[in-house]
Image (cartoon, rainbow, N blue to C red):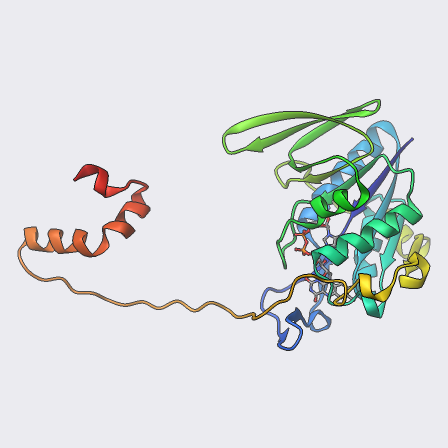
Length: 273
Ligand SMILES: Cc1cc2nc3c(=O)[nH]c(=O)nc-3n(C[C@H](O)[C@H](O)[C@H](O)COP(=O)(O)OP(=O)(O)OC[C@H]3O[C@@H](n4cnc5c(N)ncnc54)[C@H](O)[C@@H]3O)c2cc1C
């Protein structure tokens, strides 16, 4: 039976949230959480494999204790097991220490996995780095933004759209894919699934001692990224009145704004001089 791991992040339900100015991290305890939408597509892809071929699915998440909710939701949708990585030293992690911690947990809890499926990016940080960094940590092959795939024996064949081209790739397993949001529309959890998720779900909570990792390797201490500033960009509107004859107006307009007009219509106007 295929052994699948899906990486699930809990993201805040609203976009405007206060930031901790000192650490540059989101004050997520002030928001309700939800499963990151792209992670749902990855989970759906895993669930379809389970429906067609039979598979055991482990959903794994690193986050504060409330992230357990998204693992229960994953179980309600059809995952078999949830693992929550939550410990004070893991807080404030960047993508490097997130992927390091996820990798150590997968090695310990799911050492014989066939395929890891992660979302392509998150709604709150949107770096798209965790999947590629995780495959580096685990020293396995991988592909990003996979639209569709099928597994035959030990091989996965994948479709991937790059610009206007369709790429067809093949890779040996074990491996990792990040799943695009173009296909695999997520299912709703069934009522019996919700009951199972809250009454019988197998959710394991692990901290750094369980994983045997040093506090310096995870969370804010293990992070190579420093957030220097976080702010909402402001926009400004200004009216510029051009007067004169139609010819003068057109000449002045192009003299002042030809770069902007060129980029709006996708042509360098200097080519037409
Ligand atoms: C206690 C604690 C507090 C945290 N607080 C914050 C916070 O305030 N703000 C914040 O953004 N992050 C927080 N994190 C999580 C961590 O910092 C980010 O998840 C990480 O940096 C991912 O970056 P990204 O969102 O750009 O992921 P991307 O690379 O864009 O995500 C791509 C895919 O990687 C997988 N992935 C990403 N993150 C996780 C994860 N944590 N668990 C499982 N799979 C994942 C998902 O499949 C996702 O779809 C916290 C973690 C802990 C333990």
